Length: 110
Length: 114
Image 1 (tube, rainbow over the protein chains, first blue to last red):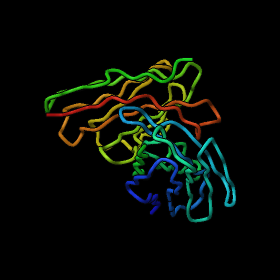
Image 2: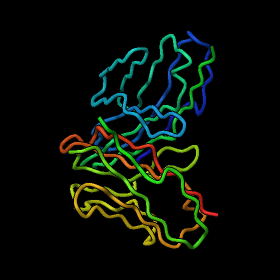
Image 3: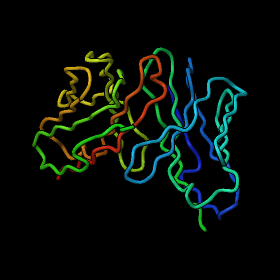
């Protein structure tokens, strides 16, 4: 059965303290791995798409990487405004929909 | 430009009532998705439209759930005879044709069934 597992469930960082969020997956026919950010009371906001092992994408303080079994979202020198829930999702085969993990709730303290 | 909008933002229904949730996708987006998000969980797929055609409804949890998009733009998710387990945030997302991987989400409708 296809699975997307995110860890940790919650993470508290001091401002400037870099860290990584993990998304491990088991799926046949991966067609893309996606990272979204979700703020309270809002819908998920698209961040990155990764398609193949070894691929990396960067945006401001965020960098996403992909291996054959997992993806990491690295946060460098985070700021309080980076506080949010980060969701990992995948698309497989011919399916159009995304399969989401349960998210990592990130809190960055000033 | 305008993003995906959903209405109402909050809905309280008594068990057994019918509800209708509306989604206005981004103009020009032919693909439309509905997801259900329980508290503390990621969104779970319900159904997918391309224009007015419902191409996948495999995620609808029961025959009480029904979705339509009659003119290929606005979509409505209807839940009949609501149950407490239907309480969740219902998210709508849209995307361009050929770019269904890049989905833009609305703010969601929080449904509480009492």
